[in-house]
Image 1: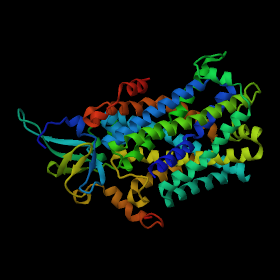
Image 2: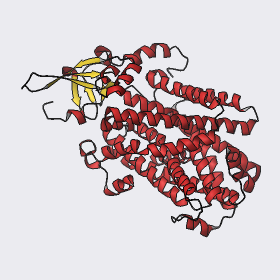
Image 3: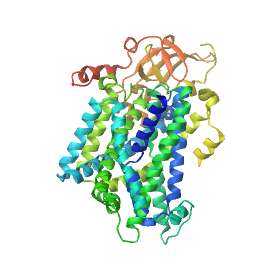
Length: 383
Length: 116
């Protein structure tokens, strides 16, 4: 039974791995540089595995979520800077994800974009308000599994496998090294989006993980994110096989779905849209909660996604306000795909403010006892 | 609690839990007492945005002003244990902590589905 539960959790994690940042950057990187940047995705996936495992371990052993550690270790003044930058990135990401949900709804229904933004926002609010988190995780995680259609599409597009193999070896064949660097930073930022670790570690605290759950934590991080990384490879391979050299830049979510439609027809298109809808919708909910976790942990408020809304009132009010702010932002007509690019690049710059305190706590024997970081985790974390 | 602890590392900025494990604020500042040449003694914990004013210059004052500036003094005798979190001996309501959540709960409970 336990194995079954772990398998279900991992399936949900795979479906929930990809968000709008991964979709945009992996397909665009493929369209611009072919398979050259696959090695960066590997580094990004190793990075998110290392830090998720570390955050989960800190949560299990010390009972501290990320922003507890940030506040305790960075001091009040610096932790305010960390909080503000985390919340700005979160809000940008949330805005982009809600825009992404509205675009998917538009592709499915043909209704006007602005009214679909409202429908997307109100639907997300109702789902989060009335549904228990276990169900939210399952519904959006399994729905997101439809994105596996891109893995099938990647094979059906008959890519040059030797070129893909070569993509896993760091190299640069371009006249435009700045653009290459931009995509490399973007791919890292997309794979290591901070909201994922805020969300993951808070969940560990809430589910009252203890040292006995460290194996489960490791399995979740390695298998869930590792297999989720395969979806990123598939997206880049599709981008490279379909768009490279044809002068097409997939600037719209709609053009990303072409990656499944061209090799697989209407069914591929439908699965791609539904997969993106659930993946991006699930990511919107995770981001929403992550923003509320950060503020509540920084201020010492009651928090929790498994609590009913009035069980943690200021936490609930925070996510409601964040949702309203993001809805207001997306209603201004800002382009979700462009906003995603800004959010991902900004989050890559702000990453150290999130990850360094975790590294410090994970090395603190007073908290972590025999479960402190090993040398491998420290080296990989620092890199 | 006679053992030595590093107040800066293991107490300040840590989460407060009441006697029923409810999260009810942070240790935002400590009140120390002692005359010249005497040992300093921690006599109370201050919790709430009002305690930020003295901590981070202008940033702290602005943050305190934005957050309403409320501050609660918890006598040191009310501290039960200091581990990953600081556990208190009484309920938050008795100590005047967590009032923001309590005030908001009254309104939120009236919305359908808030107590699912």
